[in-house]
Each structure stands twice: as structure tokens, then as C-alpha cells.
Amino acid sequence: MSFMARTTPTAPPKLGLRERKKIQTRQAIRRAAYQLFQEQGYDATPVDQIAEAADVSPSTVFRYFPTKEDIVLTDEYDPLILEALRARPLDEPPVASLRHALVDLIRQYAEDARGELEIRLTLIRQVPALRGRMSEGMTRTRDMLGEVLAERSGRAADDLDVRVVVAAVLAAVQEAIFYCFDRGRIEDVEKEIDRALDVLARGLPL
Amino acid sequence: MSFMARTTPTAPPKLGLRERKKIQTRQAIRRAAYQLFQEQGYDATPVDQIAEAADVSPSTVFRYFPTKEDIVLTDEYDPLILEALRARPLDEPPVASLRHALVDLIRQYAEDARGELEIRLTLIRQVPALRGRMSEGMTRTRDMLGEVLAERSGRAADDLDVRVVVAAVLAAVQEAIFYCFDRGRIEDVEKEIDRALDVLARGLPL
DNA sequence: CACCTTTTGAGAGTTACTGTCACTTGACGG
DNA sequence: CCGTCAAGTGACAGTAACTCTCAAAAGGTG
Image (cartoon, rainbow over all chains, first blue to last red; front, side):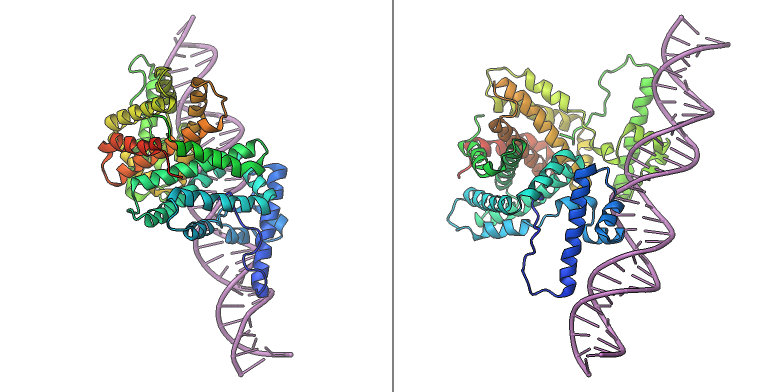
């Protein structure tokens, strides 16, 4: 779910100067990058320029973000999804757990970092490289969720049924998110995700 | 569906020397590339080396394949899928049409170019860049199929339900394909695709 | 055969990375 | 407060994927 990243630091205070500076630098780079991307476009913005704007050396940019794409797509949410999923009651139907875990997180993210979410989604929509990168990330999310779900329902980790369910649900959620985004109605995500999942729940008429 | 590409020329004879040479060159490059990829890996094989092996200049390689990834992922099947889909009877349930169109094509491709399919899938499995690129291609396939399906069922082109259905079906098909591939049982694709789609047909227990 | 168009190769330039190394700057014990 | 050590940074050199331009070569055509 690489369109979600955390801007606010995880643990509030208790950090040494070193750690604080790291967070600052990271944010400075991201901020500079987002600004430049919006002004001139992603492809038209060389990393060197981002470095200059963030007042660090190009090497440092690559130290913080292994690739330029990662500046937009760093995914700090996967662990949270897993956590949320594992926190669901074991007697809940697996798909319902998945649904809740996903919806909760997305709602939360849309609430406390909506601006960022929009920049991200815009860039992902526009830049093919980012689209690809994000799908790639989804594959990993899919694998992880598949494993947890398989475990929870006592099936083999690579069970085809489980994989299909997870893949379908994630695909539906993704469609719903972009559907809302395209209409500028991100506040409806939750509703539309439910609608999308209902389509799957009802069963496809083969 | 970028893991499918056509090696055999579409129209058999009737080509000038120029056209024939183009096809030859294209194949020479692909062949050389596949060989080197298998020997040393994708990332470890620079385009210059491919060019040398295929006995053309690096510029020529880029003229035939806009990116190195395209050497593996050129997708010549999308038009065929659309065609196959449009050829289905209009009174058939849309999802069934989709199912048939996809299964038919994949079976055909698995039959007449199995070796190539395997090389491709192997590379896609192993190389992240290719995975991303293929997912990107899938997005486009999804959009196209969505439009056709919407049209056939008299809905808006961007109808969420249609998009969800298409996304879910493609995701399921993809899972089934890789499921077979991972087990070295590509001959079972058809069976497993049916199984995967049945999961969706039955409806997910929310 | 001569003319025109397509295709090709050579070369130069850009950019996203990668690796190395010396320098600076927080962290920490005395 | 200070010296030492480790972490973080910047400068630099190198690689590889493209991109562009231009002139030479080769196919098609009258």
C-alpha cells in the first residue's frame, strides 16, 4: 500500500539530536521534492535539484531514499496493516478482518494526512514509473497479507484460494480509492470501499 | 497481460526484404537478450552486451525496444484479448465472456510458445523492475477491458462495479498463472484459472 | 541506374544510481 | 570539559540506461 507513508514521527519525544536531525533531513528532502514535482513534474526534476533545494548533497538524498521513486512511495504502513489484521478477533470471517483492517487504516491516513495523500495519488496517477513501483509494492503487501490470512484460517501459506481472495480484495480496494480520488471525493473512500467489496461478496455471475 | 508476446510473425509471407529484416533483427535482439539473461541475469547484462551479441549497435536495440524491460515485456496480446472479448455473444454474462476470452488466449499462448512463456515468467518473478512493469501493463489491460465490458453491459465507462469486477478477475487469473508456474505445472493453467474464478463466483464471505 | 526514403551506427550528453574516502559532528565515558 | 569513537555527510569517480543528432548505408521505385 505504498501510497501511504507516515510524515509524523512514530515515537514523539525521547530522541537524541542525531535522530531528530535525521527526521528533519528526511522531511526536508521530501518536502523539497514534492514542491519541485508539483512545479515542474516528476521526470523534469533531477535528484541533484532536489538535493540543492533541500540543502543536502545528492549522496545524502540517495542515502535516505534508495531511489527517486522512494521519495514518493516509501511504504511505512505495511507493518501497521499486519498489526491491525492480527488484532482482529480470530473468529471473525477472514475477509471481514481484512476489510476492517484495510478500511480503518486508510480512513485514518486520509484523515490525518489528506494533503499528502492527494499529492501522492496525483503523482502515481501521472507517472508510469510510480504506478509500476506501487503495483510492485502491492504484490508484496499481497504476499504478506496472504500469509497472515492463511495462518489465521489454518491453510497452507500458498493456498490458491487465499491468494485469490487477498488479490481480489486488494484490487477492489485500490479501484475504490482511485475511483474516489478521480472524483475529488476522498472523504467517501470508506463508503466506496464497502461498495466495491460488496460486489465481491455478492459473487460474480459467471 | 505483458507476459505474453508473439514471436511468430502475424502475417506470414508478402513482406518486402525491409520488413523481413526488421523481424529478423527484432528476434535476434530478443534471442541474444534471453540467452544472456539466463546466463548472467537480467541486471548483470548491459544493453551494450546484448547489442554486441545480436550484432547490432546499441542505438538499434533502443530503436526496437524503448526500454530494456520491453525486451522481455512487449505486449502484443492486448488487441487480441479485446478482439476475443468482442467476439463473445452479447447475451452471455459479462464475466463469463471475460473468463472465456482470457482462458482461450492463455491456453493458446501456453501451447504454442511454452518455452518463451517460461523464460518470461521466470524473469518476471525474479526481477523487481519487470514485476513492476508488468503490473503497470496490467493496469492498462484492466482499463481497456473495463471499457469494453461497460459498453457491452450498457454501463458508464468508469462504473465502479465494472472496474472492480475486471480488476478482481484479472487479479485472480494472474494468481492462478503464477500458482501453476511456481509448481512447474503450466499445463494446468486452465484448470486453476477456473478454480480461482470459482472462488470469486461463489462470493467472498464478508 | 539514379533518386528517395527508411534504417542504421557513431558519438555526445543527461540522469539515476553505486562505491569510496576523507571530513565533520553528535554521543559518551572519564 | 575533553578526547575518542561511531554515525552521518559531501566530494568525486564510475556505470548503465536512455536520448538526440547526424551522416552513411541499404531497400524500394521509376
